[in-house]
Length: 276
Image (cartoon, rainbow, N blue to C red; front, side, top):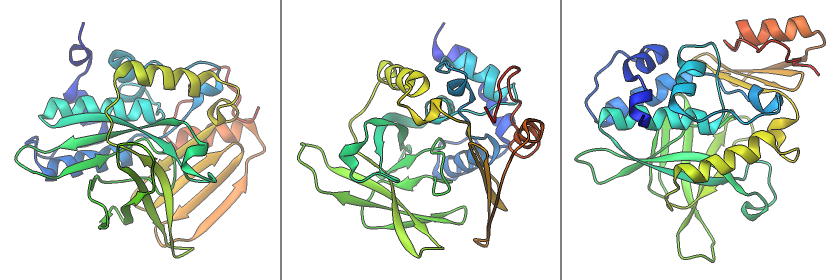
């Protein structure tokens, strides 16, 4: 059975609440991307449980579309890829190095997945990514052009060229931090295309290696029009649309499960202790 036979476009669009047009144009691309980003949470609970999540479309449908679960970058962007291809867009999977919190781009492996999207009839292509678990994540796609700022969903981004030794141009996605009043690097990437077997390997390492940060503690993210919410281990942080930040430490397992379900929309698997 092919990937598209396992994927239900109507159910996916209903899950993310997109009832707009389906013509493969920029308005649809931006609308579907934003609807996905505001509807499906980021979470790593499979990895915390000691296993890499399945990237099979049927399993992603069961978990994220029909079930009350989220996922991390490989899961999110696989779903988005299938949806965009089903709508008539051209999509090329890419892989990048997370530079947020890193000393140099080269100090991290290529473990983040994102998408290059072409719109029929347009020369520009776009960077799409609904799976970056951070406050600076994209809410709408940005044109793959360096030196231009883009704004969408209340967030500002830009692409800048980085020094490189390889044959392909190296780009960095940056997000504007309103509190620090500075641009902050998110990840670096080239336009080299990657295939499904590459992401199977990346997914296995990120989801099972004791060296992966995603196997060590729960990491949940949820973005709405009013706020960004994160749970990093036991630390719950809320960032409001006006930039106000509040946080507290969860100490009770029952409260942690309630927060995951009510605030993040995630049904925590039975037997998994969020607070260890």
